[in-house]
Length: 224
Image (tube, rainbow, N blue to C red):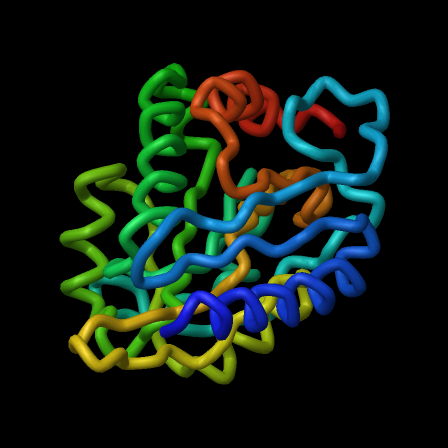
């Protein structure tokens, strides 16, 4: 994919994401090569104990049913009900944003007490379900967190769920060299256990120390 085409695609997705989030956020993209585009927050941060960005609008958890890494049906809304949840959309062959983001969350999760760790779900939803089988997802996620939840399935459902959160996803593209590009929003959304709504957002490039600071607050259900 040419740099010009990538730039045009990212710009188109950025505009849609900003409108949906109503927080003037640009979209990051994960591609087959090169660094992710820079994410910017133009909205002033409200007073909050979290280092992540407090959302102006609290998004409902998507009504999404997919397949987990054990091959069983998984109802996102029902099976994470009443539990702090980090939600990220990406794909396992992503060369940059996805492994970095999930790796940083994994390190931060290990810093939690065993009690708090059990109170936080980390959910990774594949944007490339044709290649991300349950087995592939499990193997990839285990290197970051053996208790991380991986979901795969109907891409139309995944795109619809992501769009409801202001995250844009495009169909995967197989490049001439056989690699795959899955262009997707790189935001991580944090849902609080009190109302199962997203209150905090983490942009692409968020440092591990930010997750390490915020995860104990999420585990305890501290209001944003």
